[in-house]
Length: 633
Ligand code: MIG
Image (cartoon, rainbow, N blue to C red; front, top):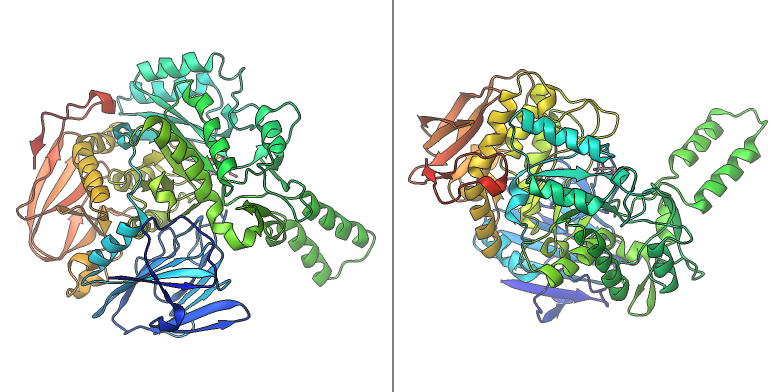
């Protein structure tokens, strides 16, 4: 059952599609108060209760014992001491004797003290008091998730080819480089479906332009790649370069489609292209206008995009720079003491994504100027909707690949997400795994992390183990940062191991796509914590390194360097299947703890009794998969 509580006059976030009769907050079942304009509420937890949720966020599947924040943040250091990542997914679920879910439909900052100050108390503080809260009860956590998903609308459906293996790197800056990547894969006989174009394909980082020297006859080129079975996926950034004669900028400015400052002038900040204006995706007309711009690339044959920098990321503002420079100038010639030195240093270090800058932005919502801080978490989501709504309207569902960095519930109807700038760290394999069920709860089914890690240098074994988890994530994309060690699968010694892993993905596509589509239809999760399925089993309840996938199986990736396998807990008897290329090895295992050996070229999968998994033959492109002739394991 779902009960909606409304307080004040909430901004319409469009997260919830169902319309429910609202109750007054005086009937809200939890202790609550408004203090300094902030709504604060709390509830007690039993020691044994598990608190799930928050989608893309740091730490574990069980979110207890830490402080989280809903505030979309451009932060490339995903350490466990962080409070937020790029998304704001305001759904939590308490699993225990009386399970319930809470969705806080509120687009400004929320602070979630989930047993940080007091072990058994959750205290949640909204940066405001105009909100809707949905209180959801049901018999099981899974049922509660389905109920919640039922009111937020169906998840985004990607095309089948988006389940193919995808290669990205911030540096594929011209056609020769892209060709060499495709050739690298083809020569190594490793399957591949997509190659990504990062910001360098554009002319001076201007959205919806192509650097004609780097990609002469772009449309021809895209067509040629498509004929080879490869799709190119360009990036689109939120900031629009301020430049006279640049059509998008001039049109946006003339129509008043950019975010404003308090004085009514356009808000400007520096990002990749230099000084930029920021489309006001929260204004329906501006949103529609921006969505239509994708057409120029679609007309070139492009069928997929990734939206970046939409928290929005701001490197600096003219105001910020000038204040910092004034401060530095005033200190010139002075003998700095430590306090002054660190203050100066912090001033410059704090130029990016500065709270002062966010506070100076205004949006046009129904003709009213609304300060950005009140709606911060909607910005990236609204960019996804700009694109996704246009694609669905023009091309129907399941045609165009779209995923975003920043997100809010509601955008799950228009696109997927990737988990942003992770590191080539072993611990990030697990962080990736833990975010999957949490993101699924919030409607984001098409998701994945940068496999192999984005920042820093990857090693061969890390990429293989990361890929072996990525075999199961709907978005299976290897992506890395400029300046890091090359980590495409064909770069390493003994490429056969990579082929073995990636071929397993292609063999599983019929199963994964069917499971995905079913989860979408039933408002269900693709990945579940073990505790959802085995609530009375202590080891399953505490398991944070394995996941249930669909109705049939369990996954348990290896996540430590130099490990020849791992300990796996089986909550019931299962068949261990080791997949490697076309090889399938089976072993019956009984309920309990096991040490399972997993070679670097193997993908372990645990299948429940009485269940079967279809496999097709591997192919080098998804279009070449024979989806009719399946073998079952
Ligand atoms: O400031 O476009 O998360 O995937 O490669 C960095 C360059 C901007 C951040 C994205 C990353 C992408 C990178 N971008």
